[in-house]
Picture 1 (tube, helix red, strand yellow):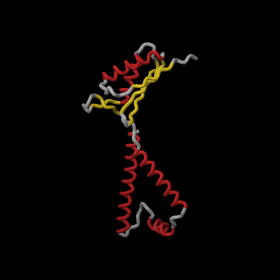
Picture 2: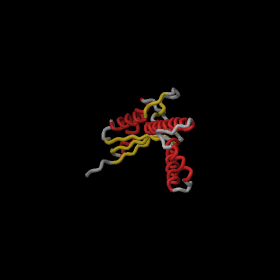
Picture 3: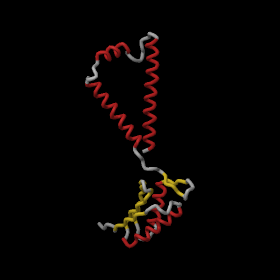
Picture 4: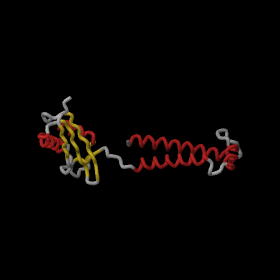
Length: 173
């Protein structure tokens, strides 16, 4: 989502920059006494003098601009899930969340009898946590947990990251 956010910010910045440059040029031309070839200034000036604030177009445009502004503000202030997790005790190293999830899922899947392993990571105020979901016998919970823990140690993910293992039996159709 950060990429979409950056693209939206660049587009909004480009539009605002373009409108600003156009405004400066038209204002300079109007101050010099020239009619604008780009904008019909006399007609706009006449309509602005006669349009009331209560006009439906003015109110509608104000609502649209306000809603777009609130949406941009919300998207900028929303806390997005970080892409990286800390790795290595106090080294400042970071590792891709997606990589941790796929490596942990592969470790869970390496346990005999486990299939369709999926790992999701979450970050809260208390720190990171992992949730492993797979098809396997419930008796394999400890073995799966140990396999995932071994992989996390290999990746140098801190030991205090909780791992929740949720196993369910394979559905037979």
